[in-house]
Length: 283
Image: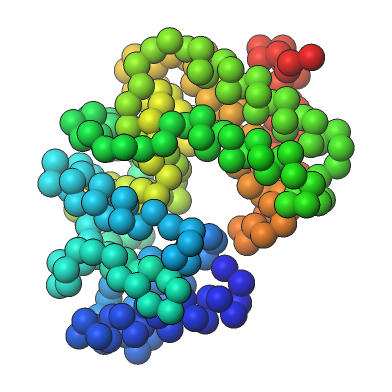
């Protein structure tokens, strides 16, 4: 968020917490991008804040409740208040339990894999409308196609991203295997090692697709602990995810720390991955 918007977002979160009887005298920013995530103290609650026009908070709250009820390893909504979406000053706010990370405990590849399998198993039992992974690819394609939104992309790099998105989307779409509800972005930033085990956070990117699309967001060491993986499909998903993430870094409104450097590095990784001839770019 922009600085002025961030100030208003924090004020909205504190006001809502106070109205619910939760003391929020101090604020620590946990994550700041299209959505602001803050820890409010001393009530010790996590508030996720997003502009009303750019949010899927109701979907996220409903899904998190259903997954938790199914025993999935997910972050919980704060039990002290009604589990719903709150609105104030043009923002929507949801309140979540703060899960204290265990500093001495890293998420090992086997634990990561087991937690993701449990999450996927629970998601297979839930029937909710969700976008297809190709909808997210199309968002990246629109960004690449709009120089006004990606003014710093050079013509060769723009052509590379466009070709990679089209080519890899075609490969993944044509896999012919099973698809299901997915987390959408189960990368390490959305995985917490807590005293109660591994939990996943942030479900606003949920979509439908092959499990390899989710697995592509995890460290590669996780792969060998997941049975039945289509290796060719996973390789395509990994390059596709890299291409999508690289595209976000070139958005003029991107606020990811050191985003441009990561965008440049992403371009280099994509060129190297496609240069091996496994995934041909369209002519």
